[in-house]
Image (tube, rainbow, N blue to C red):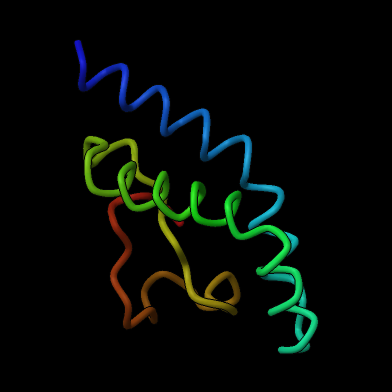
Length: 88
């Protein structure tokens, strides 16, 4: 029961702070990125903790695949990097 409650809590944190993480990753200039990270340190820390916990504790079929850039354009038969089981 405690495990389920923890999963739910981290899931909420992940969904809540995902837009902030996405905005942080879109910033290309290091100076601006550091200022943004400093201003949003608590939110980014909560998202990172939730991301690590969920990827470590979710069942294998539930995890999403993090495909490298440009992978969409490579046919599955030519890919060198194996996927985590999804069809992506």
